[in-house]
Length: 309
Image (cartoon, rainbow, N blue to C red):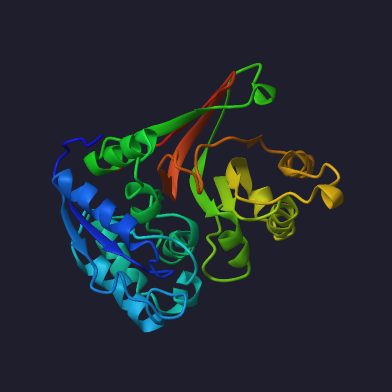
């Protein structure tokens, strides 16, 4: 369902993998235009070079064009792979200047690398949220995702809430405050030991991934654990870990619940699950690098950040 909202300048670019489903991206563009937005598509948004949306120089230029566009919102066509190759060459002061002027950078999956580096290098905030292709360009976009994107466009989003599994219900009200950050687990783990991973102390870390078997999830969490990243957080929020294949004859009962139980045995902070975020249709938008208030009341969990405009 289309909603008429205040017209914004939205810039669309492809900083990671090449667009293969061009029809979905074009649907997303038309959907944004139908809402009345001024949609500017980067000239190289549909470029292809091997698995990338253009060579490194092409994709780097696209990021800098987006930052110089004066757009209200910059959103990517898709995730994939490619941003970690660009991190040393990105002009972070240019992106921070854009953020300070009101540009909101939005993406997920591989975009986590830019979220992290932008905060680590320039203390500039950004967003984890939908891509134009798989989300805004879906045949039937998820209503919750659209509502959250509309909140971002209108500048009225103040937080998100979700329902915890019954086993995680809190017998008393609990809360924590810290900087919200996170995203794709594989990307965050790959940045350990580099200048691009933020040193967030007392943070609230949210994680998701796709196509990774639980033992790989555990291995990446182990890396964050041994690197001291997890010990510096006040809470861990686990989103959706999807599209992996069990190996019944070998796993012998090892599954995602096993990983969650192990993680809780290793840390002394709350580990909450079922956050509606990841490579799934129903996803909330989450600010990266913003102080938030996490509260849990029974099975109801809330992350509140207030107005961002």
